[in-house]
Image 1: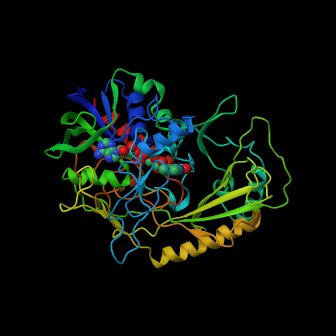
Image 2: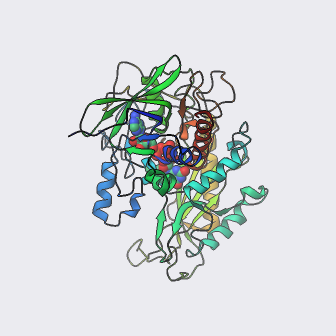
Image 3: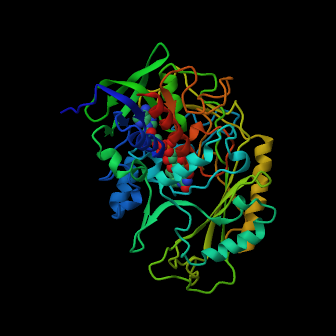
Length: 488
Ligand code: FAD
């Protein structure tokens, strides 16, 4: 048995998460004459490629899909990862540093976008990329591709109560786009109330993969971007089902393989700009929980949403991003005889923007390889005094949020281990000029190359606290538009 890979395409896309899908969709719409092949190392989990695993209704089948996304499986030293993700088995901490012990990846068609929560806030104030004048138009397009809704769960019990109480505590002095509001979510509500989270399937769009010029290859691990005289000439891909390596010629290659494996593939291909892997930043995360005070239930609407999500946006004065999720409204007892009013239990996550430094980085060398035989990532990562001050301030802010809402469920907020946000940025960052502090230009093209592009959270150059996928999809759209305009 074997399968056929194309000998030649116009564009090879590495990785089928939301960013690889955004590149493919944009090329399909803007330059339908181009042939595009998407190569994904992981398996296809759902009948339509890239659906969110919550579309798998059977719990046993869903758990199996999550397991199949978990690459090399559980960490050898007992660290636990979120379902559908897996941790770096080693190299996640250099002695004497904080490291990223919770740094995780997914490996499946749809990438982490098959497992995500769908929060799609826009960056604000210094989170924004000031050298990209077209950023807002790209974010609009990213909202379209991800099917972002701003009022998806407005009928959830007590969600307006949560919003009003947070507004009293946080809105004073904020700009109009930074006040407390419903979290924009990549989700659709069916007429019967069913909730369908957007996965890469939604970003690809039905027409894209059905078209004759676009193909997707699962279980296909890209080993190299092939180069000649500084120009991309294609990729080398290993067929993980039947074995064997194949060369696919391409005029442009887009690497959208996440913030750790994109620099890995570039490094393995001999593409090593000085900033490659540097400026690695995670959003340090503080969690707390509250029970709403003075609410009596039920506040449900028949067929309505069970769980609202609200947003306390980042500001430079309060450099945190607050994600406030009412837990499932079903009345689950907390303790004997204590059955909370549906919608009254609220989980809060506060994300901090990192003090971005070139020395926080992922490196590769010739001495260690990972389970794929690729250069193994080694993390160098330290929280600075500024980061510790910002974490303390985030503790205070999340306590203030809990006080505004009701009573804390635990005495103190907790700080999660570095890497827990699953939002790693900076490793292939975009820059305005080729001054050694960035990896790609404002179109996502790697400096000094022709036809090698990068996409994903690693491209984001600013210190953001908000969930990054909307922004990285926007930047991926920009890259695809550039390819469409450049390849005739
Ligand atoms: P990914 O989705 O990570 O996809 C990269 C793909 O590349 C993977 O499938 C991988 O297998 C493939 N790949 C890697 N190397 C190779 C190779 N050499 N050859 C072929 N394929 C390769 N973000 C938000 O903004 N909001 C949220 O609410 C949110 N919630 C989340 C909740 C969870 C539980 C998880 C797991 C993630 C969440 N995220 C959230 C993060 C979000 O899912 C990611 O930001 C997003 O998926 C990144 O998209 P991507 O396409 O850049 O990369």
